[in-house]
Length: 235
Image (cartoon, rainbow, N blue to C red; front, top):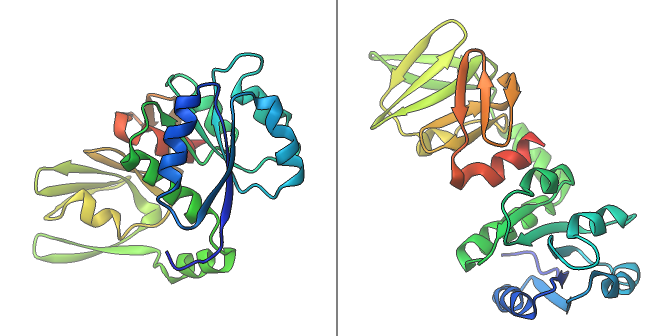
């Protein structure tokens, strides 16, 4: 991490042990400074009003007021990572533009992923735009001893076939000797991996729920390990 700025964080959770776990995770990051932890959401309002808080770790199922209700009450909320023992609030959380949704018990590996999302969201806008502008609007795929130049806008989805992938467009499909993991790095921001076997073009989705997406007549289940990222993008 090269950015020397300290990002101020607070934690709201009615379980002291949950606050302690998050604080211990935060201590491993030089860029993050935990100001305080609160077991009652109402007690955090003064800090939120008087401090420039960058990131809020917020429990959902709390006595008095839920984390979602509390966040809605804030006129200028900081970035939020929800921390909860319940999976069924994910859609509501991402509709509020949450950075991430962490399900307890929160491992450091999963916590790190959420922090990386936060840091990527807070990078300078110009830097993000430059990275986007550097990307091409097409990809070169090798199949049948030929090179195919395919625009990202033409691709519907990609399917893993062991050591190969099958790329589908509205007009044709081709099979390439490639892995989803490798090709994922070459795609534009319009694409997202929703399952270990599928990458889809977000702009081609016709229908979606918290469990699946549909592109034309094809229905794709959202994998458990990818659900948080997918719901965030879809929201």
